[in-house]
Image (cartoon, rainbow, N blue to C red):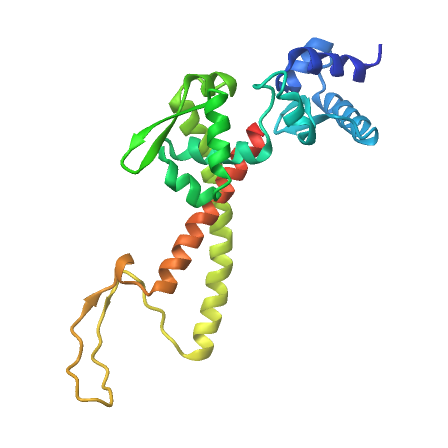
Length: 250
């Protein structure tokens, strides 16, 4: 029996994600590089056949799953089979922010999230309760069991790891942007001012108005464009964290 066939049988029978070490132990192969090579062979095998089954790599884990285009069909006989990518992304947003207002989910995920939330409730992953004019969304115990999470602390730890990766990536981008801004500032002869600093407006102007008193610039007093940029940056972080979650659980 070929090693690849053994691995395929294990993935099919388990119906879940399996780590390389676990597979190697069962097939009695210690070298995880060999296991990984066979998994890539298996993945290519299904792709070449244009199969309804796909082999998915998720970090150090692998699983056999239904191709996304067949999920709705399969759900007719088993409503809890697999989650589509778009539903997982909506679930990721709820999981990261939970408990979360339904109106905020719609703002982030657009109106299509109404259907996602309904499906997630039918599948038992999310419950909602009336909260003013909207609803408050919460995760269920089934969610934690389905994704092999012990409790809410495990979920927070997962998102912390993803967020730290996002922050590290963002720091590199900020550093590069700072270099560009410094060059531009020196070229124009401008002196950058920190947003939290006291800004004095004692500059003379052509009209007879009295000088404006010193003000403290806070997030609320920043120009609309700056606030929009801050929100865009936050939404970008949300998107990256959501994608990180989707990669793990999609």
